[in-house]
Structure formats: C-alpha cells, structure tokens
Length: 227
Image (tube, rainbow, N blue to C red; front, side):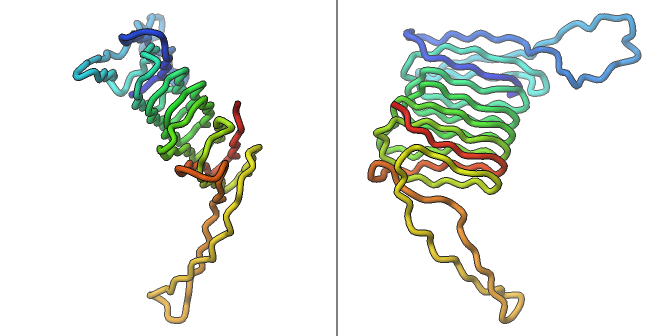
C-alpha cells in the first residue's frame, strides 16, 4: 500500500478509520498538453473488512497514495505495511506489533508487548513501556538509524550490528566473548581458505532473555534504558 499509516491506541472497543488522499506527488512531471487546465484530484479507493474480530484495511489502487489514521483498542495486535508513501507510526498500543516500511521511517511511541520492525530506507525509533517476557524482537534497517528505548528491567540477549556506523547504549551490557573466526575451504581453488568473522555485538542485559536483534548497515544503533 502507498501512503502513511498512523495507529493510536484508545479507550474504545471498536476501530475508527479515517482515510485521506496524500498531497500531490512532488515529482509529478508537467504536462504541456494540460496548459491552462486545472488538474482534478484523484484518490485511491480503499477497503475495510472484518471477520472473527480481525479488521483488514487496504488500498484498492497501489499506484495512488492514501493515508490512514486509525484508532484501535489499547490491546490490539497489529500487522502494518506501506510502500513509498511516508511514515508509519504507532502510539500507545499493547500487543504483537509487526510493521514494515519499504521507503520511509517507523516511529513507535509508548508501545507494549513485542515488536518486529523493518524498513529499507528510513530510521526506526521505538520506545517500549513493557516487553513480553518470552518474545523475541527485531529492529532492522538498511539505510537508517535504529533508536530503541527498552524498560530498565528488560531481560534480553542483544545481537547488534552496524556495518558503517557505531553502537551506543546506557544499559550495562554484559558482552559475550567474540567467537572464533570461521574457516572454510574454497572447493574451486586447491589450498585456498576463507576466514569469516561475525561482526555482530552479542551480549545480555539484566541476566539475559529472549533475543533482541538491532541491525543497520549505513547508520548508528542506540539502545536506551527507559524507566
């Protein structure tokens, strides 16, 4: 789906959806044949369906952009995806949160539960007020900052990697010894071997727990201690 998505948790039992056409695309080329004419706006159609307490919302025309503002009950599981449309935001939702944005950022504010968040060209900024004790989580980006705030009591095993950036944290991270490099023989060239070293930082906070992966290629990673 093209367009931004904003989801907020609220004290309600139903789901409220507001759909708005996005602003005109800035890269739209001028049409010389339309000189003196006013372009009439077109919006994408959308669909909403509900079955067995599950609500599906989507755009009918992937080539046009539309933004959704959604209010959901405070305890809701979310699966959100957008492409080439802008930001994806979630605020004050407690549940299993699975979000993906192909060209845009992700912002999760005061969420609780578990998170899997990934973007290609954008940053991920997430603050969790509570984490599910037995759930693994992941925050990954190719070109963007990873900035995650976890409750101070979180028990987790961290796997952090930034290929072209730095890693920062105010947690007392107990780093595990670096594993020995992996040596493999090149079957196509006799007597040649390849040595591979894993670049990930591996460690635990508060004695360890489910794995939390934080990974980016072209930016920094920040793991912050919340209240």
